[in-house]
Amino acid sequence: VVPITWEKRDRVWKCGCGKFTAALSGDPFLEFNCHCRFCVAPARYLNEKYPNGTSALVNKGVGKSLFYLKDVTLAASNPPLKYLRVGPEGTNIRSFTSCCGTLFNSAGGAGFPLKGGRPITRNCIYQADGSPYGCGPKPDGETALAFDTDVREKGDTPGLDFSPFMVAAQATAGDNPADYDHSCGTWYKTPDAETTVVPITWE
Image (tube, rainbow, N blue to C red; front, side, top):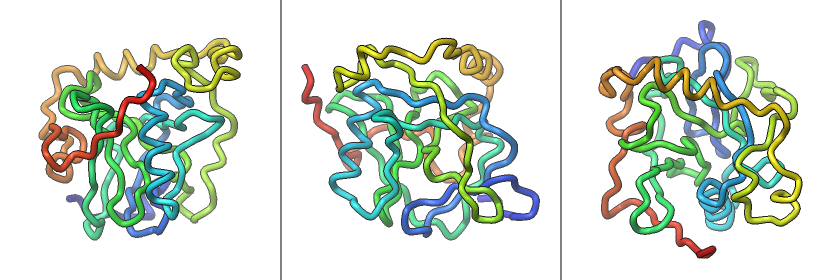
């Protein structure tokens, strides 16, 4: 784990109780609200089970900010993360803080197609001086797979462009995951017996 030098970092990710933090360099390469059930269901699950955590939901979707992992530095004093999957066979592994149940990495795991980047919960990002990130409204995506009828009827935000994700995926495709894994499986978790299973209730 690399020690955080706060004055050299642009922003801070902080969980609901403040015990888990990460320093963020530069800007995210993509931001949007994902409305697919497989992202929203874990956020709803954590909201219900851990009311003291910071909710990941924005406009009924999960607010995501995607960063290159080289720009994310976890604090050495952080409590351990816990992990969850959607359904017993789910391979998209999300992480949440053990201290208050705040969703941290909102998509990932060993099989995630983007080697050197991950989406983290946007609601937990603050400027280095402690003020809210204040990034303004972000586009809504994956609305066809949303739980709520009004979201499905509204549709994706016009002009939503996922090409930065593909560019980042291609740019890091040959990277060694060990070069980015700052905390023993944080980003490349393989599900095990301790991985929480969020039930699929919509099939």
